[in-house]
Amino acid sequence: MNVDEFQEIIYEKEDNGIVTVTINMPKRKNAMSPVTFLEIWYAVDAMEKDKSTKVMIITGAEDAFSSGGYFNMKMFESIPPELKAEINIMDIAQKKVCLKLWKFDKPIIAAVNGLAVGAGFTMPLTCADLIYMAEDAWIGLYFVKRAIVPEFATSWLLPLLVGFQKAKELIFFGDKITAQEALKLGLVNAILPKDKLMPYAREQALRLIPPKGPSLAIKWMKRILHKPLIDIVSHALDMENKALNKVATSGDMRESIKALKEKRDPVFKGK
Image 1 (spheres, rainbow, N blue to C red):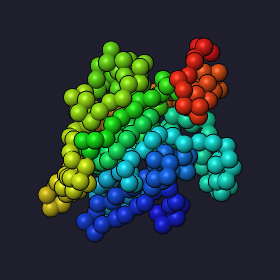
Image 2: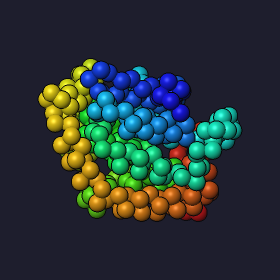
Image 3: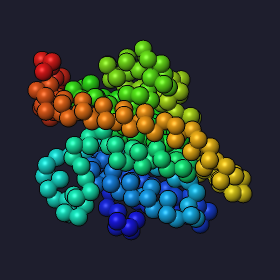
Image 4: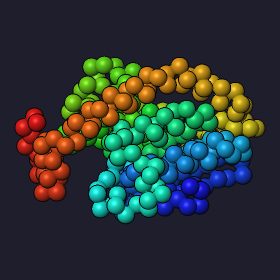
């Protein structure tokens, strides 16, 4: 897949080596389908092959970063066969794209411009090197509300960032996290007024590339930080996939979807 064939993300390359990837499905609040994740994989692949690219900025179209994962059988059946062959529907934790991003040695900056729910935050949390967030944006680690478990190796990374007890609190209860709370928890690097978010992300990106930044050294910094942890990340993703494939067919999961459609609180039974 070439970057000009993308349907669900926009890939914009500047002469200075900055590539902006925009999740571009605003009608569904940039919820990410299997095709979205595949296109992100190919965006990274394109940057790996193009030596003139230096840094990625990832953001969302319009007023959302991403409302999380998006999957239904009707949508899946409409995917062209050549793309469907590259998608493993059992990889709910998104091991393929997560490891691609984790092994990518060029800096990734996430500009979280609006709501970031589920995978809409766990993806940048695990895969971005720097996260900047709009002041009015918010995070929803709503896995418990859908009777599922986190993905993108969050089960390993979140306790590392906020501590074991706080990580459990965040995922057991799934309460909304404001940008200000995210900054205090160390989940993001900075919060900014919405109109200053992208200019700031670009300003920081320019500090990572010539002439301001030694991009070769920065690539090596990322490699030596990430490479020793690849096996741990991979194992966490395997464990998450095992759990997700168990709970995705549970009665509680079905009840959560039904309750969401009916705009009521779910009544869980623990099975």
